[in-house]
Amino acid sequence: QVQLVESGGGLVQAGGSLRLSCAASGFTFSINAMDWYRQAPGKQRELVATIRSSGSTNYADSVKGRFTISRDNAKNTVYLQMNSLKPEDTAVYYCKKPRQLGVYTDYWGQGTQVTVSS
Image 1: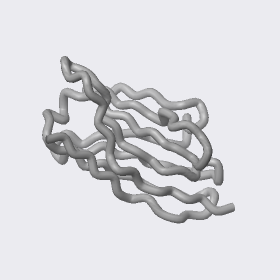
Image 2: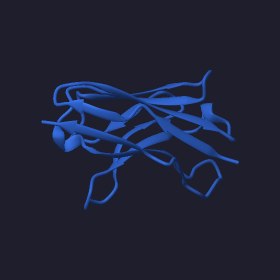
Image 3: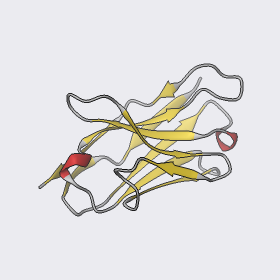
């Protein structure tokens, strides 16, 4: 079965950096696009970044130039490098395998908390 396990969250001061990891299993990782989402208290979950099987990426405007999504197909892992963190980046960050390639289900990890203090 599909499993997504995030790690790397924590408490960091504004201007600091964190790297999130999402270890995937139960599917052919290398041919799937992967997403990072986040949800702040009282707000809707929002798409932060996407990486496709080709390696091409997209970012939300709010994180462009600060966050970098990457993948290691040998390790079945997707990463989110977050630099120049701001208090408004505080949220639970989720890894998602979106529906694609004839699979009509989204899969989500359990989330990892990122807290940025001012």
